[in-house]
Image (cartoon, rainbow, N blue to C red; front, side, top):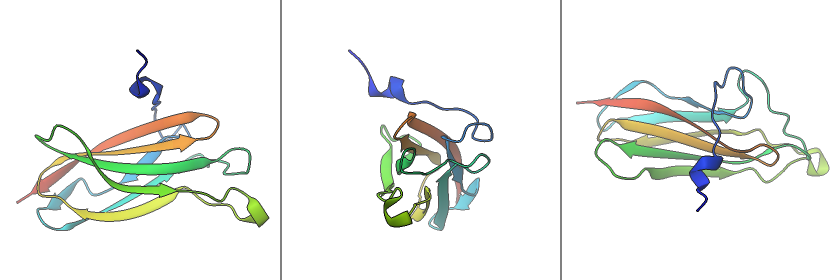
Length: 125
């Protein structure tokens, strides 16, 4: 049996333009809003042309002790050059967390496939 997870690629976003970059404070207070920004192509710009583009970014949070991650946001980029309109793969979202855990981001490039990244988030009392 083939697994979708084996198709995800990762790397150092400073040297690979497809890895979703996650910007978030390392530590937040319980109950406070967590500001998250995810983008593709921070150090090396992704082309985002009609021929080569990022289709979507999804963001998940998996609290400690939780069996599965919870999807907290999804953004589809649907304009890739029609009438000169080009979208940039850059999303911001906010959520509240009661526990520490892991933030995951995934993205899809129409030529280079699935990409992922993760960061730890510490929630303090």
